[in-house]
Length: 160
Image (cartoon, rainbow, N blue to C red; front, side, top):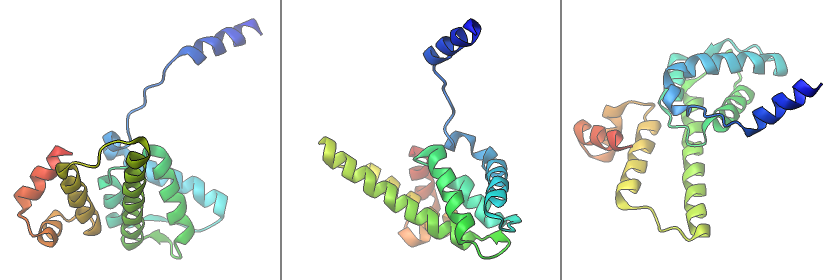
């Protein structure tokens, strides 16, 4: 019994540093499918998986609220899906709403804490990311929507 308390004390003093979900983009497909499997068991729905476009959008999203947001998005997608596969259109719509919610919360938090407003380069990068999301990850379409070249769009994305 003393060993358990010793172990708990040591664990309580340790710091776990987890990588961000964004830095693990190559694993998002596996994580999404694994979590979807557990959601299938809980809900009893017959979900077979994701459309390729849907997985691509999940991989390319920035996940500002990390794993918590990822889990919430997948739970929502599984509950609103009425077919065997989670469709790209559903993911695009939900991620767009998530982006707007995150931006709105970020602005409100800055207002509460007295932080200065977003700088122009932050606003531009934000709008570029939103255009890419709206266009399902298609950077050429996003650049066209914004009226800029693909090279300019790429430069903004590299700053992020």
